[in-house]
Image (cartoon, rainbow, N blue to C red; front, side):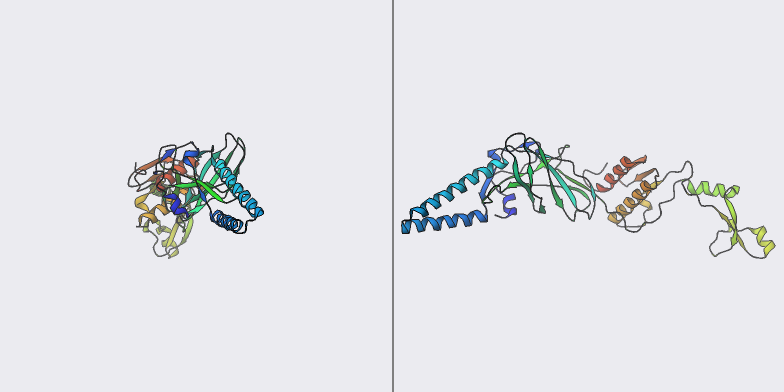
Length: 328
């Protein structure tokens, strides 16, 4: 039976559950796999041959293998029964990257559990074992995720251990710590081209004041088209009969008292997603340069700050911009 059919079986209505969830026989379903159906057909043929020809040895093998299949079915269900499933915090990624949705399977009692896996419409996890009294991490890899909160939705926890003749599974939909559907946060993809950071508020005013005082004056150079008239050295030009322009040092860091504002209205792009990508790039560049900054969006703002926690707060605001749970 294909996965989309299993995810929409009517036996248990879909509902959002908050973990941890302990699996029991009432939550588990089991059906033969393709190998199990072929095995059953072979047993049926063997039984017909035994009846037709009256072969005692054929009867022996028929019931022997049938009993082996029944025992395998019981062990397949037992492999999942008693497990405890809970959601784990999944690391945020940028749009376009592969996201890993994490779950935890705990085996508080009973024997070691073998080949436990997750299945989802977007893919499947690698099967793993759960030791006695231990835990195992199950990860679903989602590709091509878009910006925002990506809920996991309904998924299947399954096992085909030990013989692969039966598939036992349960369908779950977990909630996170805040009672929202369990999922992963996708940041906007940073803009590929790195434009200079916007000038901090007050930087131009302080630069003009320093130039007027002559504190940052470094020398003269030949006049070039577009140089502002206030920078032309008129006295030196009168002596040399050529226009000369004053040169000043460019400040390497924001002047004291300036505020680096990453403002939505100051991005060169017009498209919403392109603006979010530009702000994401600026936030990453400011963090890499060790600068404190604030983020200004049409819906809300993130106050001035610095460090990894502040960067993560800004990226979360950009990721959730325009979503119902992202507006402040």
